[in-house]
Length: 182
Image (cartoon, rainbow, N blue to C red; front, side, top):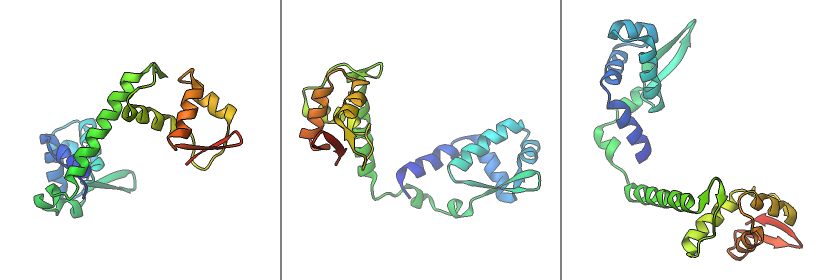
């Protein structure tokens, strides 16, 4: 199990009402109104908590005639706390989170109103910007130079510089004014 799934499970269990709903479902499957009456909660509240539990994979649903019946996911509930909290890739996850946050910070710094204000001088930051531009193109599709210019121009007026950098940094290839992602 990966860390993000484990976090989702833990978060969904960190609520008294959700624990009460889960406890009732461990006894037997129920539909929303039945749980609402049993727990003295509004049906909308029960539905909200069931959606959270279902998103975490703790609860399953199936339809019987007019009702949606909820039951616990025994496979997940039978995992031990040790299985839920041991990860081989905890450092990798933490590093990916740091990289994701840094990337967001760089994009917020250099983009205002969906337009690139200026190109970063530092290569690391410039590569984040260029990766974003590369993401505007589809892999396997070929683009004319005019198409490339139009796509880049939507967010930065100096499309020639971005186009040149995409080629220099090996994010795109060019042959006879035809461009494509590598």
